[in-house]
Structures are given as C-alpha cells and as structure tokens.
Amino acid sequence: YIDEVYEKELYDFFYCKEDDGSLMKNRTVKHFGYEFIYGSNNIDRSKPLSQKIPSVCDRLLEKMFSDNIIDFMPDQLTVNQYRPGQGIPSHIDTHSAFEDGIVSLSLNSQVTMDFKKSSNELVPVILYPRSLLVMKGESRYQWNHGITPRKFDIVYTTSQLNSTAEQDFFTEEHLTLRERRIRISLTFRKIRFTPCICKFTEKCDSQIINQNNVLLPITPIEAMHLEDKHVVKVYEQIAMHFSDTRHSPWPRVKRFLNNLKNGSIVADVGCGNGKYLGVNPDLVSIGSDRSINLISICKERNFEVCISDCLTLPYRSNVFDAVICIAVIHHLSTQTRRLQAVEELIRIVNTNGLVLIYVWAIEQDNEKNLNLCENSRIESPNICISSNGSTDKLCCDKFSYDAITIESRKKIEISEGRNTFQQQDLLIPWHLKEEKCKTEEIFHRFYHVFVKGELEELCSHIPFVKIEDV
Image (cartoon, rainbow, N blue to C red):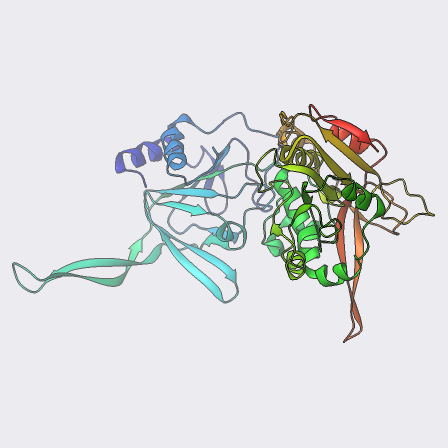
C-alpha cells in the first residue's frame, strides 16, 4: 500500500529497543491518543494520552482517507513490534470502544494472521510488508483475529519458468517456508462515543448488556433502528389483524374530511388500511404508509396509495389542499424526527391548506375510548418554511456522549395498561392470536405519548403556521 522509502521512514521512526516501549509477554507495544487496554480490548475515554498520533503518519492517513478506506480520521494508534516467534492472542476489539473500520499496516516482515469465526471456520491471511489490513463490518465485529507465535510462515510464492530460451513463459505457484523478521504493525482506530448497534448482536457488548432492554435513542441511526424494529416490522407482521380491528372512522376526522370542498386533493400520511380514503368520495385522496402489507390491503380496496416514509414524502411542495396524519407521529422516537414529520406535512400542503394531526396523549379520560386523543388542526397560510432543527444535531454533538453510559440511559418500559402510562416513551403490547394453533404472540410497538401542549409547542417551531383548533 506504501512504497519502500516511506516504509523505511515509518519503521525507523517507530522501531524501539526493549527499554523504549511497554514490554508485553509476546511483543513490545506503544500507544498514541488513547491506551488500548489488552485483556478487555477496550480503552478509557477519560484518560487520553498526551502523545497524539505522530505527524509521520499524516501521509498514510490522508492516502487512506482519499482512497475511501476510512470514513474518519483515527484518533488512536497502537504500535506493536514483534520479534520472530512472537504473536498476539485471538480477539475481537470491543464493539463499544471503536467505530467500524480498523486498519493495520505491516512493516518489514510478513506474518500470517488467523481469522476465526467459529471452531470450524478458520481463514489464515498472509500480511505482507507494506500491506494494509482493513477490518470492516463482519470482519471487524464477528471474526476473532490473532497471530500464532512461530518463527516461520507457510506462504505461496510464484516462479517464472520457460520451456525455451525465447518464449513460452509461464508461472508456477507453490508453497514455501518464509522466516519472520522483526515486524512492526501500525493499527489505527477511531474512538466510539455511543453504544454499538451493529447487527452482530451475539458478539456486541452494548447489546448483550441490553438484550432485554430497549433504550431511548440518542443518535439518528439508533432512532431509525428502534423504529424499524418496534414500528415498521411490527406493523408488517400484524397488518391483517390490525386491519380487522380498524373499521370505523373517528368522528372528528370524518367531519374534517366531509367539510372540505368537493374536488379537494387530500393526502393521508400513514393511511394504514385506508379507512379514511373512502370517507368522502368527492375528494381526490392519496394515501401513503411504510407498511407494504397495509398498502396491499389498500390496493385491494382500489385506493390510490404508495409506500413512503412520513419523513421523506414523495410529493412536490404546495400540492395538497389538506393533509391528515392520524396516529402516526407518536411512533417517532425523537423530538427532532417528530418535528421533521410535521415539517413534511406542512411542506406538501398549499397556501391556506389544512393539516389534521392526531397523536396519543398521556392524559387519558378513563371514561372515553383511547382513540379519542389529543389532536391539532393546523393552517398553513404560507408554505415557505425554514427547517429549524430538522436534523438530529442535538443528538450528534460529541460532548453529549461523554457522560452517557449504558447504565445511565433511559429504558423504554412496557406499558402496563392501555389507559395508564408510566412515562412518555413506551412499548405498547399487541397480542396476535393464531386461530388455528390457538397460540398468542406479543409484539411491542413504540409510542411517544404526548403531554398537554406538547404538540402545539412542536408546531410552534415552524414559521408561518397557525394552530386553529386543539
């Protein structure tokens, strides 16, 4: 990956005598940025080192970045110096400690690194001098890697042969023993400041600790994963049963639709099984939903529908005369995403258009059905909207992660009843009973139940929006 001149420069810079670095049983090691703690394969974020990654590495880092090998500049470097016969135990770098993407440059000598996924899956990889090992995704998160202590490696080599003095050149591959020399490896990592949410859960320390817990998201990607698991996938699985329980339109929504002018173009965002799409046949109604199975039910009923996320609606701005969004926004797990959803509703409605929003409320009247929840009707006299806070900036600043531990994060509880809520962010059980086998499966949908005035406050962040009725 680098030339011999740069290799020598790096080797000479990092080479150390036995009393220059930290002596370990199998090798000499030195750390920059943060100390890599062997044994736990972790780091201590509260104890950054005074020695940062040396400037001699700048050319290498810039080359890796420009070649799209890394997506970020590393802030931790471990330098290992191996003598012939030394190795390193098989391990996986702790998921929660580092971002995805660990790279290691070999200097001066080849070595065989063994990758193990299970007891019967072993892949030896020869790391030649100046080669760059890149571990991403599965190789980073699921495969152990280590170096067996020995003084020789079995490697492939090629010989060029010819049958005559002038032509018929060909190569032959064969195995040979190659002696190890002093080898220096430069391993670059990027410190992670949030819990890991990779898909390799059986190896993930963040998710093993919380395998029975659902935590309130603190980053955009965590929010997406939570909603995918506890909203999108749940509705796909319960779609038929859910549709069977959703027959009658809510009276106030029905009255809203019937009061619109004939020929009005209406968007039903999060239309579900389409129970509002046919309420007023004098309207031009278009529905959208994330659930493929619910959209299929709408198509069977000959409604105009499309599959779409409420955060990125596939419509031009200023198109609809009215928009309804019934029992949707409370499925979004951060305030920023809920605000972004309202902004999308306002974006697609035309000047003087109306938007009707229903969400679940934490203040419930026990004598009323839970469906009668807090609602807002919003008038948008001007569609020119500045999108203040439409990105998850509050969730992305590095400083907000430093004090966050897995233990201190808010756990999303499972609701104990349909009319009483212990907290605003909850998992609401859905009981799906299979008639044939008479078994019941429980799914948990995420809800953020609104407190009084919260929906109005959310809408107040959007300029040129007037709240007409609550």
